[in-house]
Image (tube, rainbow, N blue to C red):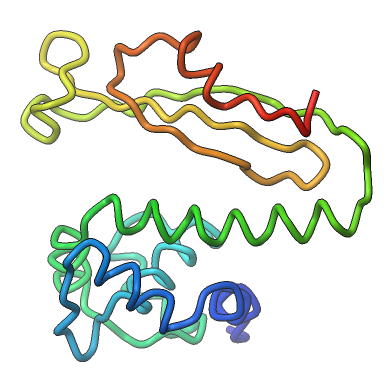
Length: 178
């Protein structure tokens, strides 16, 4: 299988190791791993989304063919469990801010269409006890504003699964868009 590492090169170009270290320090997270550090975890998450890997076992099997470090699935699982969700969200926000700014400058449009939508992600009650949803389920809701021209998210707000879309949608509005 041919190695296609363009997506991982782009990830490295959008956020540097120093910026990742600053974000980790901001949340008080000390990255002591040698083989499966935070940049490697980010590369695995991006690879899982880009190449539609089925599971952590599948990711561990096929990642080396995509040019990533070979990491055992149990190590991936343990490290992903240790990594705070807010750290990944902050890194995602930094990347999205850069991508959207460059796209706006390149397009030079007065106003563009902004799509706002949400999706609910449900899991078992014990996985997210702070986000009770219905019965034996817990869930979070991701509210996303999406620019149709660049086909990229502009802003993401996470809430518990029972939060109504209306009040959160007001926070996602942007005067630069229709």
